[in-house]
Image 1 (tube, rainbow, N blue to C red):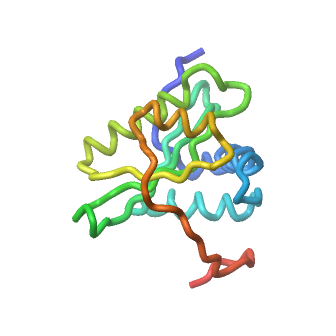
Image 2 (cartoon, rainbow, N blue to C red):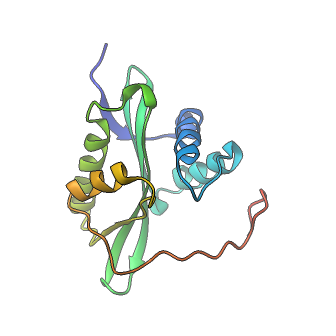
Amino acid sequence: MDEPHIEQATLEDLPQLTDLLYDLFTQEGDFVPNRAKQMRGLRLILEQPSRGRIFVLRQNGTILGMINLLFTISTAEGGFVIMLEDVIVHRAHRGKGFGDKLLQHSIAYAKKKDFLRITLLADRLNDHGQHFFKEHGFFESKMIPLRLILNTGDAPSA
């Protein structure tokens, strides 16, 4: 049995990643799990590395957890920043520090690549998640998230 290790996800990982996102979105108040949508979104990232990175914690071919980093530009910061999304550890492997490893790896990656900021949205109802991120140096912004849903259908738009 090999030790859990972090590596970049590949297209072959789509089924396991989709399962993890399905679990994540059953826990969050703003999202509804939809395997087709989650797989399509993951594929968009994996097929174009300039859009972001998905890192996985893998052991013996099985993905124990994942973290998703999306790349964008901030005019406020004057450079590249990361939108951190989709941090999830498989239910059977929680409480072992795996989420901590994924987050630390992502922060180290961002620093190494000279990103200027990492932003994330935390579910208001998830006190444990908020505490987890604050323990790693994240803090509450004076900004509030607002959304406008443009397309509720399953078909991707151009």
